[in-house]
Image (cartoon, rainbow, N blue to C red):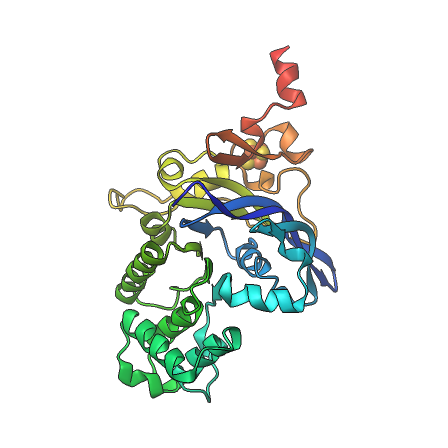
Amino acid sequence: MTNEILIKIRDLSVTYQTRIGPVSAVDHVSFDIYKGEILGLVGESGCGKSTLGKALLRLIDPPGEISSGKIIFDDEDIMEYDEKQLHDFRGRRVSMIFQDPMTSLNPVQRIDDHLIETIQVHEKQTKKESALNRARDMIKRLGIGADRMISYPHQLSGGMRQRVMTGIGLILNADLIVADEATTSLDVIVEAKLADQLREIREEFKISLLMITHNIALIAEMADRIAVMYAGHMVEIGDIFDVFKKPMHPYTQGLLASIPNIRFNANEELYKMLGEPPNLTRPPKGCRFHPRCPKVMPICSKIEPSFIEVESNRFIHCWLYQEHPEKMADKG
Ligand code: SF4
């Protein structure tokens, strides 16, 4: 990981129009991804992490839309790109590994054709034979035998299909790979192997990875930094060791406390976070976590805190770490 920023996301919001009103699935989110880093993005189902990942490639379809914000890549705001620029950007600069290979792979297309087509759609000058050689190398590197190149998706195991999807995401040597629950359908052994392969590829090609997952153990093992989302807001970002050692946001504290660790005593009750995530058609006023927060203060239900840097490279969205009128009044 370097200190050079690859992509800057500023004030990004994604809104879905539903019959019962607009849903702000991602609400004014700002953060950076550095060159060569693995950033783990975690949070409960429905917190907006997959929507955020898709928004980075402008892959939000109606009834959703990116309702505000900028996505700055190489000093250019991709929100201003036309269709041709977007086509060049997707795959070559930023690529995505989707979570469900059965719906993403074409059932009547062989594995070699999937990879060759991906290369030739973006690199018109590349001959079929050279694309085939690259496809073979990638598949081999992901631990699939060359004889499987002529298989159809249904002839492969779930783990192999997911590795093919990973190969499609990596084949164009994009600068940033967004991996959305890329290891969820795998058993633990295959998952660990794929995680190793992704790490090796990151080292070799100096790519950046945004790993979207609910698997915090995997993030602990792989990521350089962790970003935590709650109800469409980014609530904490920091170095992986710092956040695991001293989580600062009450939601991150609850999330980490609810994972059993090796020292967990089976007679103790595991920490349970109270309540449910909010209905995003009517999110709570102020901090969206306040109805569940064990440290809630009167200000929390009135005004939303800002997402600010509270320590070097540590960003938090919580009134506990910010001055506010009620705190100032207490100080007298
Ligand atoms: Fe809890 Fe208030 Fe911080 Fe929200 S702002 S996480 S309610 S302390």
